[in-house]
Image (cartoon, rainbow, N blue to C red):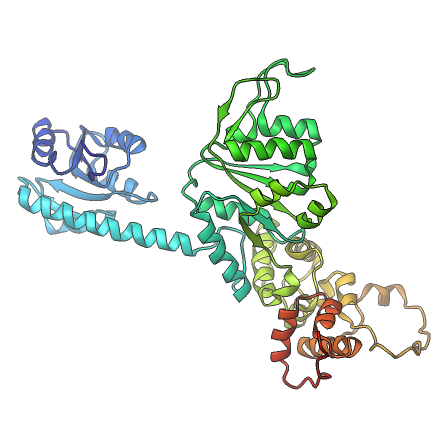
Length: 475
């Protein structure tokens, strides 16, 4: 029987009814039988079922209780209730319990067949809608709706459908492992294992054993056979974090596995086939490492089939409020704190900060604020002093005169943040103007001074038409 036929489960304590429905529909559907609700539950654990035809009154769990239980599950089958005790009240109760429809006995087979076919069409629509919703929803932890993040998520979705190797690059703290999880979750391999390996945490010998496994007696202390991460990730995804830290000898062995899709355990001679989708990540410049001779060029090309370059947080500051709110709710809940949000002044300071540690630093900052605040709303006084100090812009270039000496602050004054300008637009405008003046109008150099990309600077300048910058020099 073709496996593509819809699967129908018939649950009824009357043998004649069960077998009669099987005889009537087995040419069009795969028909499974269960003589009570509990047996039906066991069948649903083992098989994917599209439609359940269940009797209402059965020994033990009745059809109504079965329907309530099953309809709450994710990807539940559609349930059609069959009963000899038909009434409008029973029909309404069955639908409220989660049934798709209701039919009275004796069953008219033509009516039941039409009901099943309508149910299968409805089920197909639901599954398409759910698949679309799952594809459109960023995985847990990836926060951001800025254009750069939307483009990145779209690229990751497209790459996830393939088996091609993906190299995720970006500064520390930008969320590389979250995107690796996303690639796995969106891929056809999502039901198989996702196996991470943090390469920098292991020395060369341990890493080789972790990746490829070893046989008993392969080296001193190898008392038993160990299955490596490649084998554990078979049919799934292997994530190699900090790939730039692996030694040249291990790079050679990794390249061979990627090219042949086979491996040999350390100390073994048996060739083992593996079907693994590899995702690697690094915050290092692998191209520069290739030139230096510390990373193999052929491995670099093998890894860099698809590249996801994660931007530093300073290049998409419009996502900071959403990130702050997300982390605040999560951390406050974990710590049992009733905190309602940020004041606007606090939000301005946090959004203007450059976050050299990126999203990881931002999360740690929010956690520190939540733990240490005494109020139910986070204010500027809750922000770590080094962030508030960084918010105060340095004097304009060219002004060499030192400020007059100030008296040493008292301990109480030292503990409180000094007054700062909280107008984020004014601060941003002043910073760009000074950078352009310092760079003599050269926008590429001005972007370098600000620590952002030239494209980001161009976008910010368009948002500040009042800025009268020097005419750009030849670049």
